[in-house]
Image (cartoon, rainbow, N blue to C red):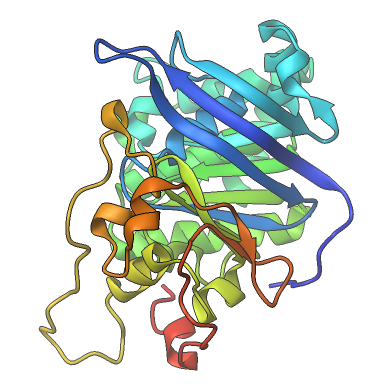
Length: 342
């Protein structure tokens, strides 16, 4: 992975907060999200279920749940998306961003041939004619490794395996030649072998097409070795952010360390008991005033329960973390960086 910081961001979020009303009162799903993704680079967004990963993606895409209030700034290729009307925003995002969702069976229309589903975005956003759109769909199906791509265009989603459906979704995401590709838990529903095939395909596509990419996952093994930077979410807050290699080698937030420690490693003996993180994620309806991880943190002190820590910088200026009592800057063993890579 390239470790140099590019100069122009394709995507940036500044002080972004997402709030949703509920019967228990306002829920702050995301709080003060700040990050940037530069051109031709890849970002991993990780965290447990309920950390806010998918909400963040939906807020960026403009498909957040009805009634959600989004504050702050979201810029795509220098354009402030929050200043656009919904139709204008949909036009910009449809052209510049491709997305692959977690479950292709619910994303694909079971009553429409897959060729037409791939063609749709090209015809809407690029004004392609029917013949041009079909030709492009066949090319993309071939590119993502589908056998007999011309015949595949006439088949329906139920005629394909889970891995093949996800390849179809990737083809659909590429038809507008986007500048940014987002994979939102794109391999969760697949078996391990197919997961690796799809992840390798995404990485190849990004390199060949010089795109930026976001990989969203609860599995740190998915982002290890496949992303330039990593954003760790917990309870709707960014708790650590930096170069993937640096965060894996030298985690400073105890939640990041706990996630890394909970992963199975190739060098562990068979049947080794997996480590877990005690406790439960925070209840957003009664969010604690201090650090959201404090109730589960073995090193938490009184200050942690009372005051939300600000983002601090480590020795590497690009490595930031929100912790009052961060881990010492002692690098993990080199095996920690490679043992979990899928």
